Image (cartoon, rainbow, N blue to C red):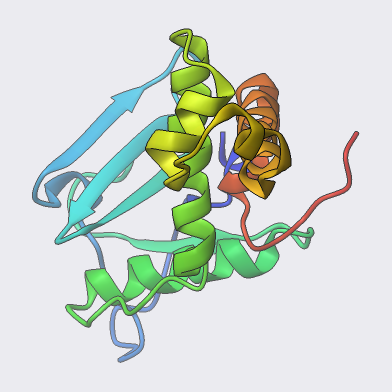
Length: 184
């Protein structure tokens, strides 16, 4: 369902004037490398990879046979900006334009921190001590007395705690980055 992820675009088939120069008929079923499926209520889900980008769309019914005109359903909710960006990227791909950079791309520092979080969580789950994690991930070198006063001791503990948070469901917030929704 499109409401679960702002990247899933809800489409509907509409009648359009074929003489209108703004109309772009699209044959969804003929998109190259399209992966599509019908669910139990006859809703149609499509996953299309164009170049490096992936696009997801949803129709309440099977798409038209052959080229058709579609409208996009955008809920006016807190994720509107993310949904609108997904629509623009799909449209650009369909008309052969460059999709551009995602606004949702993590800054380098944030991405690197999330990589450390995952590595720290995995290491701790595999039985590694906090000190061993700090040696491998953060470059700690020293004796036990050095470890007790080193700021990397708390840093590695925060990384593991953040990993636990994401595993328990906090990852959903990453799907909506940079939009933050209040916790239920």
